[in-house]
Amino acid sequence: MFGIDFSELIVIGIVALVVIGPERLPKVARTAGYLLGRLQRYVAGVKADITREMELDELRKFRSEMQNTAHMISSSIQQEVSLAEQEIRTIGQHVSQPNEGATLKIEDTKTPDLFQELTETIAEPSPQLELSLNSNSSSNRPS
Image (cartoon, rainbow, N blue to C red; front, top):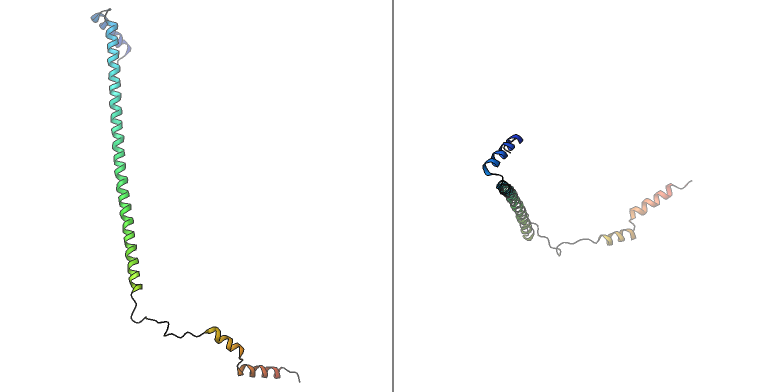
């Protein structure tokens, strides 16, 4: 971390041994190790908190983007539905309002019974058809 070599650690240890003394050196080393461990845990906790906050911030941004997108889609769908409803109402108004020249009453119209006419035509052969049959049969006879 700081770039301390092994030879520098030996010099620090010898100075600590001379200054602190051999009796208190193990207790000071334990306390220094304990404090260094606490410092490392505190730094790791701060890093984790910062990472967690960054992730939460990213999630908040993502959530707001998704809400904006959902709102835009919802408003677009509502517009399309309202346009379709307006078109349906317009068509319904045109259908329910009768036109002046297009009124048609079934009682006024006389629809011929086509089936009856066909059966009468088939049952009664026309004189032209009989005449053409007679003339064809006489011309086809061998003499």
